[in-house]
Image (cartoon, rainbow, N blue to C red; front, side):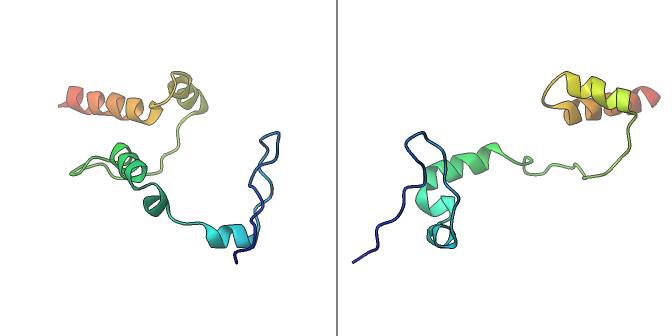
Length: 90
């Protein structure tokens, strides 16, 4: 007979500290929720054939603050500005 498992949350909805046994029972999302996992995978990451290369650069604080202040997608916006500069320089 299986041992009764402790619920992960209390009556207030707070998650209790997970134990080694809890992690041992965990299964990959693709096994438990295959459709959701497939949809999640489709929506994330770079498109196939993308030619972007990850780099690390240092930006002035005020420049970074400006782009971040406009919300999500700040890295894409910086990339567009740099691309426009390159195209204008040709």
